[in-house]
Image (cartoon, rainbow, N blue to C red; front, side):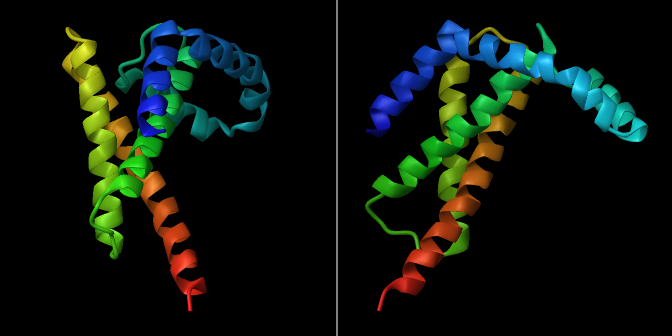
Length: 150
């Protein structure tokens, strides 16, 4: 199941259809968001955009990076689930999911060479963020499961 998920993720990423569809939806939502977001937050977002390695339409870039975070996090959970040695501590869970997310991101980066260093680092950070988020979710789920066992 994990291998199939990884293959599907690579195929979806290569086709760019997902990011285009979601990017269009983000662009449609932008006018409404501009009305709701306070001016100081807009200023921070504009300044942040200048620092990020954004290329292409912003909505598509956001969709691609958000998809990457989720994808790498799920890969980390798969690795956590198939490990032979069971993780019992918070740090073991977090390390497993985070390192797995970064490792999968690094593997994909090899296929995307040559790419600017800033893009590579940002993509590796997306892998780490996905691993951390899904590691926290996995830890919460595991704790609930362990608490229910007699």
